[in-house]
Length: 294
Image 1 (cartoon, rainbow, N blue to C red):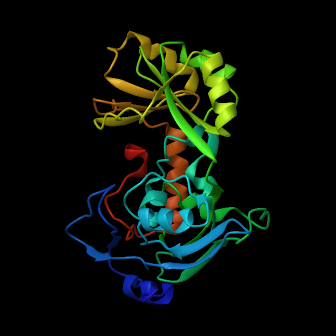
Image 2: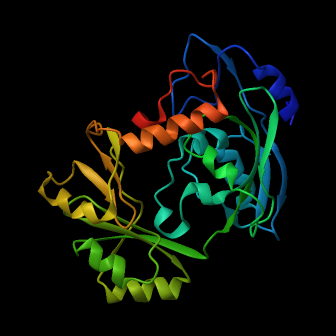
């Protein structure tokens, strides 16, 4: 990396308001504060350990391409930077099988509000030492610290994968199929992604009457709603085609923006205490309210 984490910290400084910017694909950077960019580049890939270290400013697509050469992947949505994806914390549509994005982050060097570099987490998959502080950064949108570099857990690319569609009840498919990677539903149709050995995938699909398709449905871009998985059946009253829900996860991609909701007072108080500890002067990504955008 041309820019080291120490260089990154020096650019951030310790006094004036500052915001971090990547490729601006997930959020619009504020125009009234100084902007900094995170280090870019892949430091190393350890295929046997299924880990990778890279700068937070490295494009997600570059990391995906480099890992594919080793038959591995990370469960990040395409586009943008690694740091931006972690800061926003929106997992990809394979979360049902791969888990939340925060599960992929093993270690980070981040820069706090004092301008000092802080190491959080450990470089191994089975790390249990200390507090899992690095995962607190996931979804914090840079309001607690700016990610400099990260060590991520990778996953093997499946030998075979296939998308299918069906008019069957999505919850029946969720519980009946063996470890589906993704189950999507728009109130009428259901889409399923299955991974594994080709013969096993074909056999399951035939048993449940699934029809193979070339690609997944296009997700609506109006708003990203978060609901409890048990609440998703209530969407049956909505007009089919206005949303696509991730069954078993609770994320809903809708044509309309997410309805406003009242922030839980206890949650707000806890958030304020954490923010006060990490960034008491509010200089990191000022104006970003995590509780109103998650």
